[in-house]
Every structure is written in C-alpha cells, then in structure tokens.
Amino acid sequence: MKSKRHLLLFLFLIQQSILGQNNRNEIKDSLIHKNYESLIQTTLNINKDTVKSKQYAEAWLLKAKAEHNWKQVTKAYHTILFIENKKERLKYADSLITAARKTKDIDLIGTAYLTKGIIYYSKNEHQKALDNYIIADEFISQTKNEYAIHKIKYTIAQTKYYLGFYEEAIALFKECREYYENENDRAYLNTIHSIGLCYNKTNNYELCSYYNNLGLVIGKECEDTDMENYFNHSEGINQFFKKNYELSISKLKEVIPSLQQNKDYRNETVANFYIGKNYWKLNQKEKAVTYFKLVDNSFSKHQYTRPDLRENYELLINFYRKQSKPDAELKYINKLLKVDSILNINYKYLSRKIVKEFDTKKLLKDKKNIEQSLKSSNRTNLAIIILLSSTIAIITFRHLRSRKRYKIKFEELMNEKGREQKKDKKTNDKKEELDINPDLVKNILQNLEKFEKNKRYLEKEMSLIKLAAYLKTNTKYTTKIIFKYRDKKTIEYISDLKIDYIIDQLKTESRFRNYTNKALAEEAGFGSTQNFTKAFNNRINMPPTYFIQELKKSFPI
View 1 (cartoon, rainbow, N blue to C red):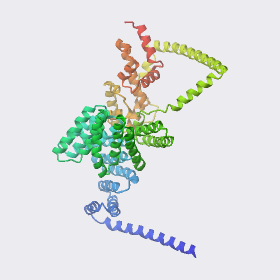
View 2 (cartoon, one colour; view 1 turned 180 degrees about the vertical axis):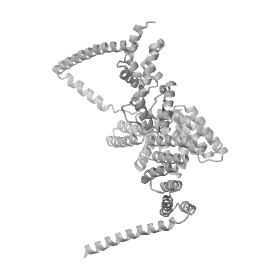
View 3 (cartoon, one colour; view 1 turned 135 degrees about the horizontal axis):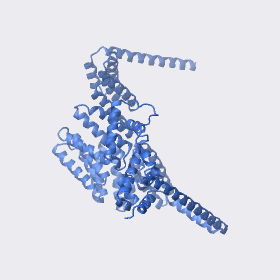
View 4 (cartoon, rainbow, N blue to C red; view 1 turned 90 degrees about the horizontal axis):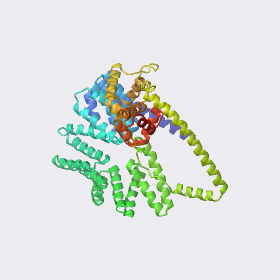
C-alpha cells in the first residue's frame, strides 16, 4: 500500500513539473508577440522579481532570434547575463559575443568582450580578464565612444594592479583621471583612489598620501563623501608603511564601523590585519593577535584572502610557537596551507613574489642529529672524508672540462660564428599557417619591429602580457606570431633579445665589463640576478663571469 502511495506521489510531481514547464512556455509564447519596447521596459521595471524578469528577457531573446535581429539578441543576452546566477554567466557571455559579432557593430562587439572580461575578473581569473579587455580595446578604440574607451582603460588598469604591474596601472589610471575629471565625479574619485593604492605598492608613500588627501578634498568639493572612508582606509595602511603606527591605528579604527555598516568585509579584514601589524610593531603582541584572529574569522566565514594577508598566519604561528602552544600552532599552520591553496589559484601571478618565512626549526634539529651521528663513528667520518674527496675531484674535473668548452665557445662567439645564425629572425615555414587575419598579422609584425628597434625588451620583467599590450593584440596571437616569425617561444624570445643586447654592450663598451652580474641583470631588465645568469648560460653556453674575464684578456684597458 505504501509503495502505491509513493508511486502516485511520484507521478503527481512529474505531472506538476511538466505542467509548470508548459505554463512557462505558454507565457513566453504569449510575450513574444509584444513589441521590443514593452519587453525591455517590463524586464527592467521588474528586475527585483528575477523569475518574472527572466521570463520577459527570454521572450525578448526568442523574439529577436526569430526575427534575426542580432542587435536585439545581443541586448537580450546582456540583460539575461546579469539576471542569471553567477555560475551560468560565462556561458551566456560566449553567446553574447557570438550574437554581437553577427551585428558587425564594433561598439557592441567590444562591449561584449568587455562584459566577458568583467565576469572573469569577478571570478579572480585576472589573466583571462585582461585577455578579453585587450580584445575589447581593439574594437572600442576604433569608435568615438570616449566613455567606453576609458572604461576599458580603467578595467585594464585595475587588472594590471591585481597582477602586480603597478607602473603600467598608474599610467592607465592617469589617462582615465584626465577624462573623468570633467565627466563623472564618482569615476574621478575612484581613479584617484586607485592611483594612491598603486603608489603604495611601489613604495612611493608620499605620493600615495598626496592622492589620498587630494581625493578627500575633491570629494568635499563634489559633495560626494561616500569615498571618504576608503581614502582614510588607504591612508591608514600607508601610514603603517611610513612607520607612523599610532596614526595608522587611529585612522583604520575610525573607518571600521562604516565598513561594517556597508557589509564591506574585504576592506574590514584588511583594516584589522594592518591594525594588528601596527600593534605588532609597537611590541603589543597580545593586542596584535586579537586583530589577527579577526582576520582569521573573516577567512573562515568568507574564504577571503589576498597576498599581503598571508603574513597574518605566519605571525600567528610564530606567536604560538614562542608560547609553546602546539595545538594553536598546528591550527594556524593548517589555515596557512589553505590560504596558500587559494592564493595559488586566485593570485598565481603574484604568489611567486610573496616573501614566505621558511620553518628552520626542523632543519636545525636535523643538523644537530647528523652532527651527533658523525661523532659516534670514526668509520663514518672516514667514509665522509673519502666521499668529499671524490666529490671535489669530480667537481674539479667537470670544472676544467667546462673551462675548455667555454674557451671554444668564446672564440666562436668573438669570430661571430654560430651566434649570428642563432640571432637570425626567420619564419618557421614548416609550421601550419596562422588562423589570424593577414592585415592584423602585418600590423602586429610592424609593432614587433618597433619593439625590437626601440629596445622595449629591456623594460623591467618584460612578459608575454606586457609584450601583447605593446603589440596591441592578445597573448594568444602574440605567442603564435612570435613562434611563427621568430621561431621561438615568447619568454625565450624576450630573454635572448636581452642577452644579445648585454653581449653587444660588453663587446663594445669597456665600462660594462666592470659591472656585477646584478648590475647587468638590472641593465637588461631581468627580475633577478639568478634569472639573468641562467638566461646568459642558455644563450651562449657559458656564464657571464667567464665571458667578461676572457673579454678583459682579449681587450686589456
């Protein structure tokens, strides 16, 4: 009897589901006959009722598709995209771009790519966001829509800020500032705030303070005080770096109530972290830990973190280690591992730049155990001596063999054998043809020639993203064209240009031969001395120190 009732209930639910679907289809069918103006107005006027709003928007979309009205299809997709739940938005963004391209309207196409970039940005996929912004810029820059042009510049600048390219972000924000000054007070204030944040990241704390104070003054002139707390928040953090710890605490504590009222847990978390760091610097560790725990509570509740907040857990671990509280120490070690997993996904381009404190406690313990073990056995000591002697002999042999190889390579290089062939820019004809518009390829190659001629590759930490921006294209096209016409992967191409420049300077300018590897690395725009020496070795199969030593022998001053 029970099973019969369950079966009847199951059939009833299926029937209701089918009826519900039929009702929704009937509603859509009846709405399709309305005109566009009516559908659009109703969709926008009832946006609080997402179910009804979506019905009208989908009817709008169906009507536009049936009539092959691609401009209306584009507008309908754009509306549905922001009604739909966040998980589905990317799918609709692809449909939006497809529809926009069918309109052949460069303004609509550019806006579609901009929208997709914004969606990626909201998902913390900053590289993908930037790729779409660059494509959007290719289209919008051809229009006279100054507002859209500067909106894209602002979004690109914002993304570059999160990727760590602060100087590039500042340049773009300043362009936006000039435009927004007479166009949009809120956008103008947002831009000033962003410039201040960038200057803080580049350690230019005085300029950061200047822009924070400027924002407060302009906000009062515009009678727009909504941004006041954010300028004070930025300045509170900036004062920490200026070592004005008491002032920093005062400013940050002042803004927290309004952040809580606005439910802005992100900036509240950052404020609590820097209040904690101020107390830590003032050697008030117990107070500091109270605020660090607030940061941890926010992470537990919202899973929110960012690169500078990672230190919150390093400080908590150190605090409880000194307190000899292993349970608390283990708790925050586990939290730090979780934080790292999120940073490696959301901030993978910045995570490699985070200075991480390594746990040396175990290493010291291991070292002590090894030393005690060595003292306990003369036989072991003898074995180690023999092993060390053998190792030294092998290293010496390899060193002499390398020196001989370096000598041959140096003579070849000075006679210009091999290297010119390696430097030749050749088209890789064996590879399949590029699926890129020939006119676009021509423009990119012209920009590439300018890039090489003007030695833009010497810029600090030149990357695929920077190169793509210079070539006015996206990273995908940049990679394909470099591989096709320079027969190299992009990073290798940039690295080789840097090294070739340094080699030429060493050969022609005697003062360069007195430079340290660190100075040469900076001259070529490498991020570190290690990267420079590795690239130099890869390029000519010898270290820079040997090459310079042989140059000095060949050309004594």
